[in-house]
Structure formats: structure tokens, C-alpha cells
Image (cartoon, rainbow, N blue to C red; front, side, top):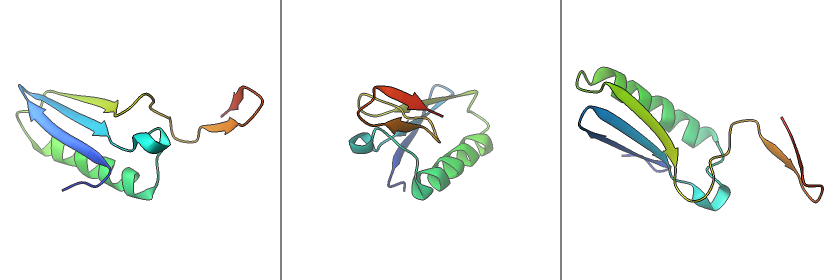
Length: 76
């Protein structure tokens, strides 16, 4: 159902895993829309009591994060 994330529900917990590890789970339009859809799906499920958001791979990059390449610094 989703291209850029995985969505599962077990024991009242919805787990949303961002699945773009090759780009450190950076947000793009597709991921943003799919995340909204997954959250709506969790909201509609009366059995869901909690949502866990995680990322595949070694990093979860926040939206708007940009690296200052070569300087070892980051900026918002």
C-alpha cells in the first residue's frame, strides 16, 4: 500500500517505519503524503492506542535538516 514507509498494528500499537534508508529517511513529497495517510489510518482504527514513528537504517533525518557538507556543522 505504501512505497516509502511500512505500517503495522499489533497489540494496540501502530508502528510507522520510514523506509528510505538510502537517503537517511529524508522527507520528500511522497513520504510526507504517505505519512499523513498512515496517521489518518491509525486515527480511524479504534484499537490503536499509541503510534510509534521510527526509521529504517541508521538515521532518521528531521524535516528541514540540511548538512553543511565538509564543515562538520549542521544548520536548521
